[in-house]
Every structure is written in C-alpha cells, then in structure tokens.
Image 1 (tube, rainbow, N blue to C red):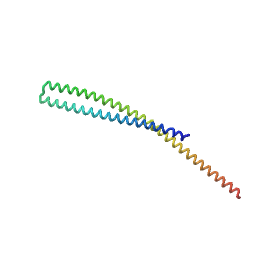
Image 2: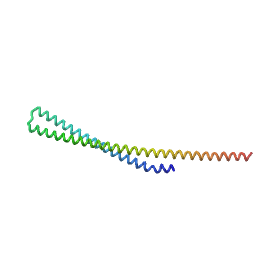
Image 3: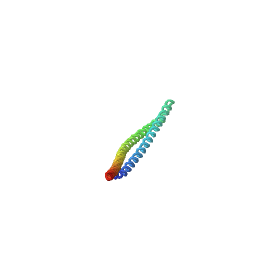
Image 4: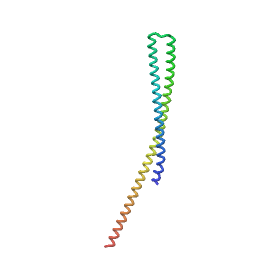
Length: 155
C-alpha cells in the first residue's frame, strides 16, 4: 500500500516542480524588466542633469530669453518623463514582489510534496526491510526447528 502511495505522489511532485520552475522563470523575467526600467530611469536622470548643467553654463555666459524658455520647457518635459519612468519602476517592483511571492508559494508546495514522497519511500524501505528480516527470522526458525527435530530423532 505505501509503495503505491509514493508512486501516486511522484506525478504530483513532477507537476508541482514544473509549476515552481514556471514561477521561477516568471520571476526572472520580472526582475529583468525591473532592471531595464531602473536602467532607463538612470539614463533619463543623467540626461536631465546634463541638460540642466548645459542650461546653467549657457545662462552664465548670457542667453537669449527665448532660448532660456525653450531650455526650461525641455527640462520640464524631461521631468515628466522621469516621473513617468519612476512610475514604471514602481510598477515593475510591484510585479516583481507578486512574482516572488508566487514563486515562494510554489516552492513551498513543491518542497512539501518532495518531503511527502521521501517519507513514503523511507516507509516503504523500512517496511521492506522488516519483511525481509521477518522472512530471515522465519527461515532461521524453521531451520532451527528442523535441526532440533532431527537431533531428537537421532538420539
């Protein structure tokens, strides 16, 4: 009976392991997306900083009011882009957290099934060893009884 149990659990273990691997792949993809979004945010911030420095440098040298206004409008657009990218990063972090929680849940389930399979196999091995020992004891008992009977008969 216990042997059947471990055999019945093996397909379940394969399925839960597969689900864990799928969740791990999804987590890896979410992390790659997050890294990409963080990289883009860094680039935007760097570009905005460089542009702001150029504006400041040109302002120190004297700049036409129209050009200054154009610089400021462009910096404002960069600020909006930075804010939008920060929102993208926030969403990517949230997606990562969801994927990680899902993967951890799948991992816990997979480990629980793996432990159940291992315990079933151990129980099967223990039962088999006990049967073999009982058979050995029974055989030894018959041999001993047979020897005792033959010794009594020859005396």
